[in-house]
Image 1 (cartoon, rainbow, N blue to C red):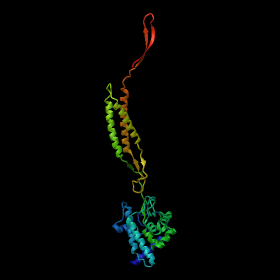
Image 2 (spheres, rainbow, N blue to C red):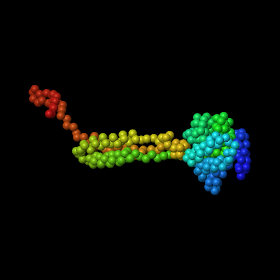
Image 3 (cartoon, rainbow, N blue to C red):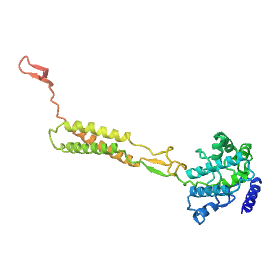
Image 4 (cartoon, rainbow, N blue to C red):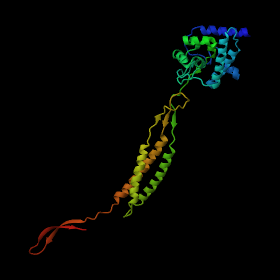
Length: 329
């Protein structure tokens, strides 16, 4: 069994050392060397299109760890054997945590991804960062973000492999691929609820203005209407109208929120509900203002002219005509 396993790893080493173009994985396999063997071993069946990709990756990494721990380390110097054991312990903690990168840039394709744009590291990138430092992993990522291990020709990775106790083929066995994110064709719309304070305040103000409007309307046929309701209607109606106009908000794209997890296009925040309340405020305020103004200006008492100018005729031999000016006090 050990000879068979050694032969398998030897074959994997030859495959890893062959230079291949950095092309997407054509098949729906989570690893280019063993495919979905890890998921099948964990579940007893192959993954489907509905299978969660993180679960596939996690099952593969658990499988890869098991295979590498079973591989004999005969021939390794004690220091390298110790480092190998440490690296596999780190691999175990990595896949248990379950935080894996996203293939943002190749929708519909499976791709390896060393470090994604959110800073999440792949399994090999995590091992490099933990043992050689994050800058080393970032340097590898600059040249080979979406490349397979077999296609990486950077000295930084070659140096790390030599010091890790692993072979390049074993690193290729660890490296998963990730399904591309299929973004929705159009961004989602998120309905923003009306703030409670605005809704409650509008309801109370609207109720007050309904009463003021009714009070002003009741003065239509009265010869001497009161002025209090008229003044109050003008002021309160104008206030509610201005409030509604100021709260007419346009829909905006929310760059700080993602409807589709930590990636994907940002949704549009819709303020349709708040605009409806604002239109009601504008309508109610305008009606109350109009009724108050009508009551105030159409029922003014006629003014009494205290000053009179007229023509006066004086009879008799010395009579004549003159102007008269009268002022009442």
